[in-house]
Amino acid sequence: MDGIKLKKGKYVDSVLAFTGQKYGLIGYLNFSGQSGDLYIFVDLRNNIMSMFSMEKDDAIEVIKNYVENRYNFNVNYTHVAHYIPWAELQVMKP
Image 1 (cartoon, rainbow, N blue to C red):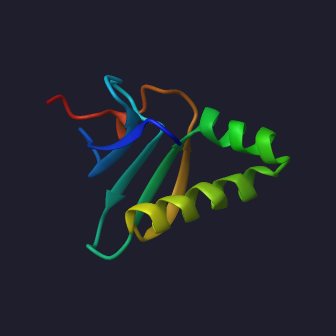
Image 2: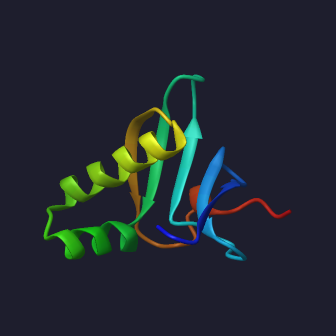
């Protein structure tokens, strides 16, 4: 996850994206101030699955745990974005 920065999302609270990218790999939307939804780009999930020989659910759990621990987000639900232009992955323009 080197090079990925926490950015403000256009349609969600936060997006994890590479510098200069219009869309991120992970988006987070906080609903109640205590927990929220995590949106994971399918290629990221698939790369984790391949790298560690995991099942889909296990790879999603690894990503969820990373985001919760690294950014102190409380994730209630996870969703897999199957194509990059998902609104939830769009970075807010500066």
